[in-house]
Amino acid sequence: MVDIPAPVREILEILETAGHRAWCVGGCVRDALLGRPPEDWDVTTAARPEEIMALFGDRAVPTGLRHGTVTVRTAAGGVEVTTLRRDGTYRDHRRPESVEFTDSLEEDLRRRDFTVNAMAMDLAGDLHDPLGGRADLAAGILRCVGDPDRRFDEDALRILRGLRFTAQLGLAVDPDTAAAIHRNRALLGDIAPERIWTELKKLVTGDRAAEVLRAYPDVIGVFWPEVLPMVGFDQRNRHHCYDVWEHTLHALAAVRPETELRLTLLLHDIGKPNCFTADEKGQGHFYGHPAESARLAGEMLSRLRADSATRETVIRLVAWHDKNIPRTRPGVAHALAALGEQDLRRLLAVKRADNLAQAPDYRFMQGEIDKAEAILDQLLAEGACVSLGQLGVTGRDLLALGLSGPAVGQALRALLDAVMDGDLPNERQALLAAVRGQRAETLSAGPAEK
Image (cartoon, rainbow, N blue to C red; front, side, top):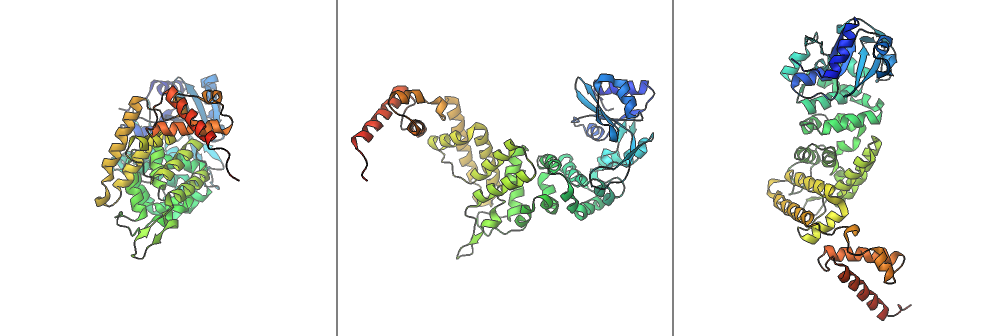
């Protein structure tokens, strides 16, 4: 028995009491049957949009009346209530040009994307499943409703949604559906970048993201063609036992499912094909690939209209992923100052996953990453000075010593570097004495020769 939340039950009860059949439908039913908490609950009903609006009064928001959708506000958030419908012709691979309302639940379910999303449940807990969604769910199969070519032609985003469901839910794509995904992939070129971005984030954080990406690089390559040269690209380097794409997928699978981390690992070597050179012994090298990868990552994320915070984080981590951070207090302190705690911990996770995806004989860096993390923990526990705000002197103190203009900022940065390097204690008098000594040294040197 699926436990329908009280606010959703109330909506169903109001509709049923008014004489309108109503059901929970789609992904919420699928997730509930899998024992997963649904992200949201959707309701379908025989009631027409104007009847829904009248029943729920000022709680009802007309969010898509043309397609029969009203959002009902509840204490737990909005619930979409949509009238049963059959869809008209699709011409933009996105939405039907028209819809026709119906009293048939089965007609409504037959217009949906996949059988596991084409189930409905009523207040009594009875499952309505004319298309075999529950059996497919039990068998771990993702199958289109009806003709897969037609489903993907209607809304091309279903191609990416199918891959996302596979990555998130661990379903195997039915062979006919899989063939249609490959066959219709070019239709994604008609889909708004923002919609692709929303699905891609969910895909890459799925438990089976690496497996899906391995099977469908041609699909990802429709909107990110930069991925395609990585597939099968032989690194010809003793540090690597995989080609660039396989290395990328093994690294992605080795990091926790956080959007920024998964995207960083997906893109950290995207620039390698552009940077490849071979030495006289035939060994492959990728000089400058972190900078090139960061450049390409920025372009690719901007193309999908990624939010600026995610884009900037991924670019930063990609640019840093191959930098050596000395396993010393000064080395880790300088990295902490540059990145902050959150991104430095992310960078260490990236380095760990990157190293785990290298040849077995070169995975010894795991211990070195442990050392860096231990030093980071110690610095944070001690409240070590790694920012100008923690420095024992301020710009005002240096102005009082006679410094002015850019010299103030330069002196503060030099003092912070000295503190992080362990050359000066973070104590006011010691810092001021260092500035006085530096000034005296500069003055005694006299004017520079021209």
